[in-house]
Image 1 (cartoon, rainbow, N blue to C red):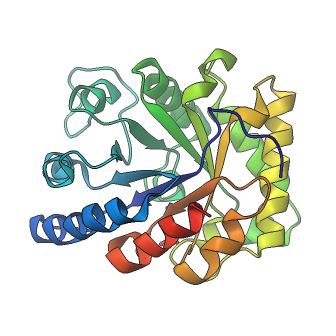
Image 2 (spheres, rainbow, N blue to C red):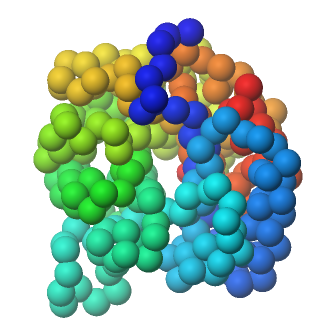
Length: 257
Ligand code: PGA
């Protein structure tokens, strides 16, 4: 096991995507609150619901040690951008995290590396912890380009970020072909890519050993422990399984090993 500093920590983040309702918030978050209380978990737990439910999630969590985050932020600070939510607003309502560059944003909403870089910089400027998502498509993997694509997304996404901001920087490796498909990267492939990301961070002059790297893409209770025990995998970004209290709690438990 490599040396871990105070900044590098185990994190399990729930990405609800565009799922949920007031009823689900009360039921799911209520169960998580009591389940996590009993867990004495060493990992940091983050819930990222659709933005309109952030207040309800916070109210239901009450004093539970769980952070809340936004799934996406605007690339602008404020103004006439109908429908957008600024990073500063997330910070204002008590969010501690924001996700940037998820493959669904890149693929379905046309977010380029430049847009991702602008958003990443704004998130850090507002004092939020940035989870920068990167990942290759199946075609890119089959071509043998996975590492090249992922490392170039890391470099591009951090292009406007100063190396001094690393305390609030987390990177999530999510192979696009593994998201929502039930197909997980093997622990060996996932570890290899996390190692490559850490080497890239080093090359970019970021203190690579201090940055938490998460794996995402069909993380489930039955594969979480094996993934999280890899030397360069510091936790997970969980989509589908985060909508089940039992599954998510099991995954959090796996991160506390
Ligand atoms: P999944 O999603 O766990 O449903 O594969 C992960 C993600 O997209 O963050």
